[in-house]
Length: 117
Image (tube, rainbow, N blue to C red; front, side, top):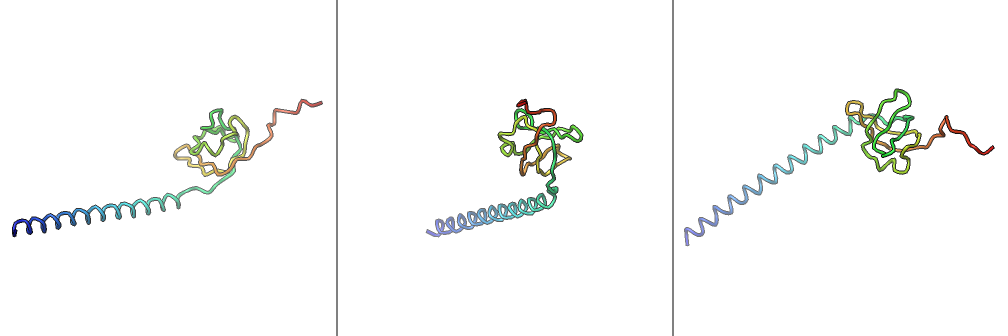
């Protein structure tokens, strides 16, 4: 009887220690993630307007100004504008060669004129 009671107490102690350790590491980990995510949000560049063309597959964008090509982080935001000349309002991550599109506005193509004469 004493051995089973002692075994139960030891098991309970070990189990509670493991649960506490797991809880402490997961809450500490989430705090670390929250603080690092907060840091990422602070480092997000200001959104800017960029003129250029979206690729036919909608995954990249070529700027008119310098002909630089950027990977689009969220291609669903430009869906329906593939291959078009547009103005993007986007966060530009120059170090990664990526842009995060906030909005898309169609532009009239300079070279194309109406053939309704």
